[in-house]
Image 1 (cartoon, rainbow, N blue to C red):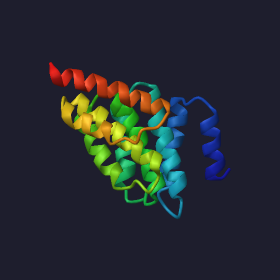
Image 2 (image 1 turned 180 degrees about the horizontal axis):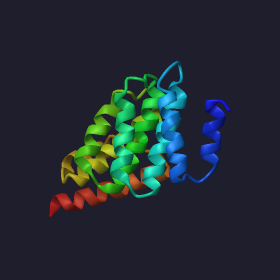
Image 3 (image 1 turned 90 degrees about the horizontal axis):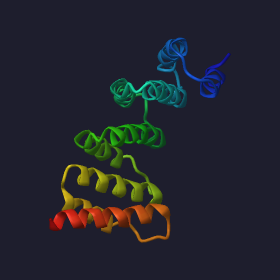
Amino acid sequence: MNVEDQLLEFEASSLSEDALDRLLLLWEQTKTGNQEGAYVKTALLIGKYHEDAACYDQAIVILKQALASGIINDPKFVIQVTDRLVSILLKLEDFPELKQVLDFRGDYLEESRQARLMQKFYLAVCYEGMRENQRAITCLTEIEDTLSNSNLVSKYQIGRASCRERV
């Protein structure tokens, strides 16, 4: 069975310790040759396994290791891995680490309007978590006004940050 078929099988099933062991072997295999996409998918699946098991530190280590490997060069793959990291770090409320990941992520954003808006939103949440409310407000006010759910969340965050700033 080729790598892509194996990854589809892993994605379709619940991950067990045995599956994790096989994924780790597959991850080693995808480090060679031109298998960047498979390498990323494997790293994300390993990270998901750890995240689902509430082993967030291990998930973070795997995802950071993938980013530092030098194997991932395509910006869309870098964004996929950093987005998973952002999700975990938000859940953990590790705002200093989140800031570092967001700074790294920012270097790989392409001209996607949605990705840039989300970057500003993540930064605002991060700044609010670090109690840098004025910076959070600045980030939120830079978000283009649209009629979407993310805009409503942004407005809510601005209100929260503004109220805290006044206290």
